[in-house]
Length: 326
Picture 1 (cartoon, rainbow, N blue to C red):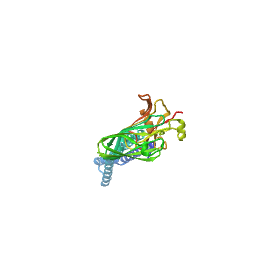
Picture 2 (cartoon, helix red, strand yellow; picture 1 turned 90 degrees about the vertical axis):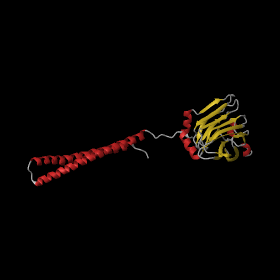
Picture 3 (tube, helix red, strand yellow; picture 1 turned 90 degrees about the horizontal axis):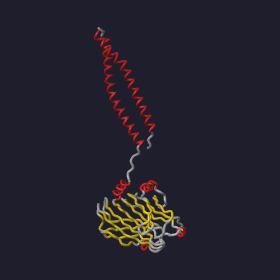
Picture 4 (cartoon, rainbow, N blue to C red; picture 1 turned 120 degrees about the vertical axis):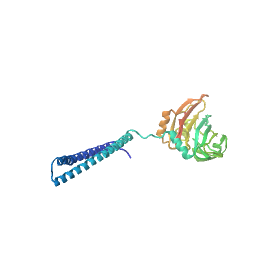
């Protein structure tokens, strides 16, 4: 519910005017009854008055005394009411002029990790397109952290821009799985652009422990379109490498490395709500502000695009996109 400062200020002025009017009425009645009563009481002491006059004077004096006590009590109550009204007014103004603090990405990470029970810390995915025919190798590493429960099963989503044919097992064949525990992978295709790995870990990662896990995957020729004509032939305007963050992570490193001498056009990053390419503007702005996206030539002279994001948001797609050259 929105707060209208002008309305609150008007209400406050009305209250103050009411208090001042009430105080004026009390003073008036005190002047009309209490003061004459006190004067008459003094005169009755100095002069000989009839019993009826003494009774009237006594009543008036009593009424004046009660009024005086009432005024004192009311004054204290009004002072407390004014102090409370001023405190409420100050609080309203603070809420109007100062927005409530928004939890930092680190706080959201801690909340999500405690809720889900597991985190993929130091998540790194390097997509190495090492040949002009689109042959690709992906190198993945992470620290599986059991936060509030033991971890026996773990999923990992991987995007592919094109399904060049063959069995899913051949396309997503995992190589060099490295872990201190036995890790048994299973694969299944979610849709034509996303493949899900399911890892069964034995023995399970105990709560509070961390298990380093790494593997690599090779994709055949044709996985990525390397020329504009090939991309247009597939009905695509650009090529994308995206990662859906399904588990909280303290750091995400996503990188695409291109073949030697190959430089894409229109290369940039994005953050999506889903595969419909709807941009998540706050996270996109955060990446821009933190300078978390960069382009550079690595040691062997190959061009690379890099996203280094601290505490990525669970449920968002982090995207590297580019246009193949003509």
